[in-house]
Image (tube, rainbow, N blue to C red; front, side, top):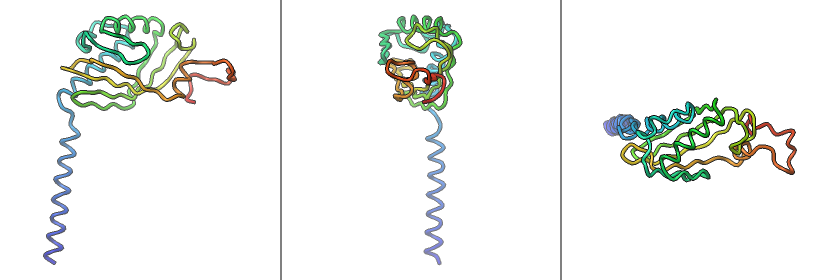
Length: 173
């Protein structure tokens, strides 16, 4: 009986320790919180077109590893202004985000209306992507974007050889 009681006590003790460790690990560090705040500043700039806070969130030598290939903070600002002008009602919804001291990863849903000049078909659009930002000293230094093939096809719009009358770029494929 003593052995069973001792084993049960050991199991309960381990459970309590592991629960406390999970709580400690689930709390974000101050660096992770700062990185999230900086990421939100950039998202807000895309929605509003206001680039006044970008210097506080993005390093001057920022590199964008997407097809846009922005090579510094000033080119990122220019892209934000252009994208906002071409799709003034753009919204960015965070579906899920994770952060640590070096990275912020966000599953985002983008929506709005395109004027057709940015490679997105004219009219309403919606797509999802994973945004990854690397941070140093609380500022974004690198950015990557990842999408499924279906999401990329929605962005590209009607294609030659496809039944374009059945393509709805506002819904998931």
